[in-house]
Image 1 (cartoon, rainbow, N blue to C red):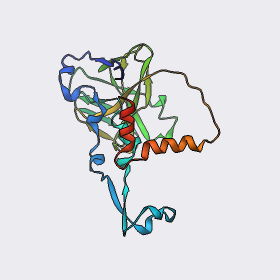
Image 2: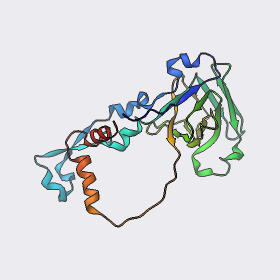
Image 3: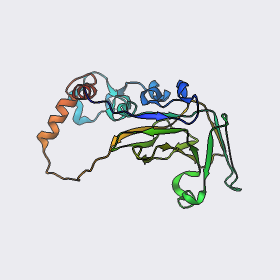
Length: 244
């Protein structure tokens, strides 16, 4: 059994920790609906199959696994935690006049505007036109040597905003203030209470050395045999077995 590393949160907003939909939650609670509706496999006509792989197949069509069966996607939705909106939030920005407004349903929630001269004026190709910051709702605490990555909600395809990717050394600095980057072409939008803003993924700070080795076919094939040598979810089964 692997050791459980404590990841502690507290909020200056009285009662927030008692409202479940507003609390920091495991990422698996926020799998997007589009992903849930994605089929596990689709039938592919035989003409679309790589002829070099034809010996694997028989019949007029063959099932092809969608992205839903890819381990790299599945693991994202089980990694770390999600920071949800503490209340309904409203944002407005006029690109011509540079007027910006915001409103929070709770009086003790503060949003600040990041000046355009800090980033968006210098990177016109970024796809963002203005940046707001949700200020001082949660403080996070990790053991010495552990930080967190603040990561956008991958594969949620939010058309209005994206939270900036960043690193916070929560063993030293504890405020988590997500930067809400408004996409180009949007004048106003609303975030509902409980809507996911970003992932918070803890990690241990370590030093790594970049290394290159000669190609070792046996080593690579051994990994493939361990990982894909069974019909049903072999990669996940092996990973869970190793990491009990």
